[in-house]
View 1 (tube, helix red, strand yellow):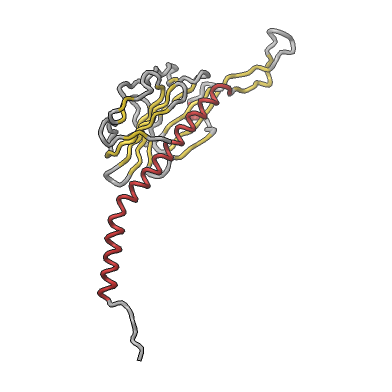
View 2 (cartoon, helix red, strand yellow; view 1 turned 135 degrees about the vertical axis):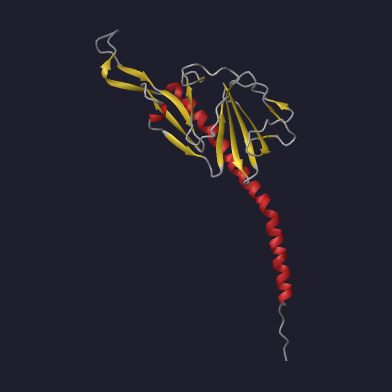
Length: 230
């Protein structure tokens, strides 16, 4: 007679227990990889759209087909009006917007809206701005020469109102030319996050640093801070 071969209940339970232990041990690492991938994707989005808005600010204008400039000749060209370009940042999204009048920026229909990946948020844009209130927003306005203005019309000073920016033991190479700095948080779990510090200077050069942390913005000076290469 042929003997039947198989697994005993104890053997099956042992294998199942091993699988559960391996799966449980890998969850934190999977969460970290997921947060890192989403964070890098969000950083790339922010930098790409910043460059796009800056380029648009240099040439965007509208033509008023009802008014001609006749100062030089009776058949002068139609009046051209400069369009002002800006980016409005919110907690989990941002919009590229343009306007030629005096409407409030938030009331203008956006040219492009971008939503950040799930569990990624913009926590600060330039000095003093935080998005603790989900309804809060911050607007940066581009000049035709690539500089940034605040909503009150004043220029953002070189350095973006911040100095002494570091990534671990490395000083920022954009010190003195920085016009934009933002902090993004990519949640790993309820207690841990990856924080990204994004710097952009007048020439469009970037410097990005990442450091693990909690709910508050770290100072990016610890041994766990690392430069991000996109």
